[in-house]
Length: 485
Ligand code: UDP
Ligand code: MN
Image 1 (cartoon, helix red, strand yellow):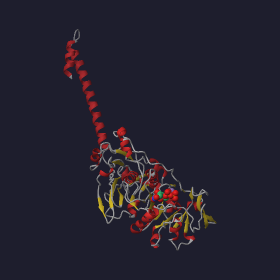
Image 2 (spheres, helix red, strand yellow):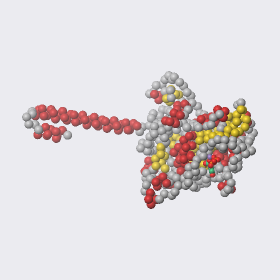
Image 3 (cartoon, helix red, strand yellow):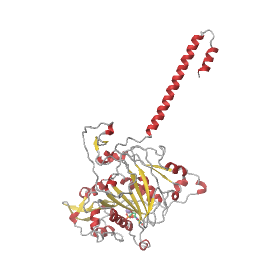
């Protein structure tokens, strides 16, 4: 770089001393070297910043559970550790994928990237304990174009089921990968979310909403830090949400809406049970993407009810399957039947969590009365208000009661009858003996409506895609995401 300038100086040197020219050339060169030096430094700094951004945060308060299969997935500590907190949405695929995920994505030629939403709003609206957890959750799920060809991360089979395990990694704050294993199954299948959880110790020490570990080292290694406030967060009883679902165009939309409601709730296992002979990879994919701990089971309606021209017992085999699951796997907590099409205020989940035997509350949008509710006079359950009583002892809606798991264990015969219109009544009767005084009245002693029996407009099945015209466009991908009967 110096040479051409020196030449130039010589050529233009008429009337000026060569000494001066040399000085000017030297000055210019120094300037140029300085510029190059500064530019190079900048480039290095940018590269270093990028490198640092890819390093995991200090893990002094992190316990990673890579595999929960050794302990019961239903242990309360496992579910209680399922805590949510704000996180900036990061395109994790751009951050690099772990253990072959990137490779799988490349093989798929244009995977569909779906991201967990920025959870800031979630945490802002949830309880202080959730905000205190100060952990991040991000997930990226890629759905293979050919859903059936994806390999599972791990699978094992019992008598009748294939278990497809999905691994969701939660770290603070960024790199996360979710492996979607949308395996096509031929028999009863279960998909389980196994979470790798970033968590502080069971009791979190919090200073004005900012989480630290017990030694306060989150803020630069200060061992004895004075805290103005102290909030010890313990694990609340687990909630088991039994959701019947069935194949139809609205299915994924319903599950998505409900799933993100449930995502606001701590220590919850979502039992999604489909009225079908086999699981649907699209449903598994949707559940993976939402990121709520779940079990995906199937329980088809018996043929005799399917064929009837009269009203069908919708969701009954599914709910009974859920009860069987809880009898086999749960010991404490509370169960709740949450149909996939209803609307739930998350406050009701925190209230039902402490149910001793049975709790009840109003449900909006039921029959011509617009609401179905226990009638309370002077704090006592006096009867039920519902547009259709039909000789029922418990004329309540499915969304209007919860039952404790311990109480369910004390009533080994309790189940839901295949009797349209009498499902709730039959199940609650099967919990006898149950005194009216033992029924807990939630939602401000049934003066509030926190659940609604919403119904979704039925949509006709999607028309088949013209592959000649659109076969090489994005529509070929979207086509595979549509649930057809
Ligand atoms: N359901 C089912 N199989 C069916 C119809 C419905 O599993 O054939 C499920 C559905 O997904 C919902 C519950 O059972 O979670 C109640 O069904 P629906 O909402 O159609 O009944 P409604 O609320 O109108 O009584
Ligand atoms: Mn419904």
